[in-house]
Length: 78
Image 1 (cartoon, one colour):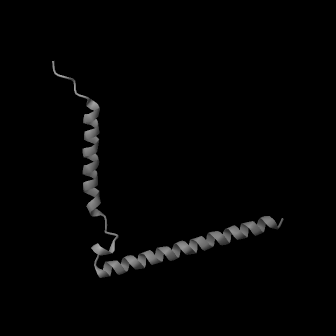
Image 2: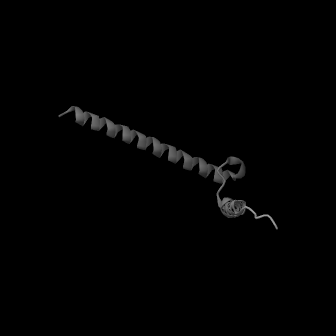
Image 3: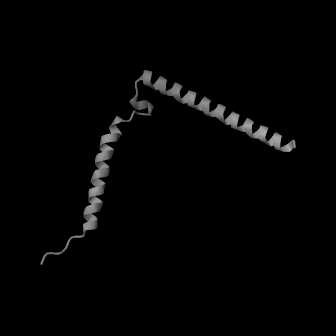
């Protein structure tokens, strides 16, 4: 009488194959984010984009801090 195989191992293997197939499909379509894989023009665009993001983030931080200060001042003045 043959031994009954454990179906859990089969299901785990099936899920692993599906995840690997999905990863293989989507990963090559992502744009490179490091300088070694980019042309000089693309690298300059990336640097400018990151600079704009940093400036925008700093501006949002300043606005949040200013809003907090205004709220604190309003709370102090009944």
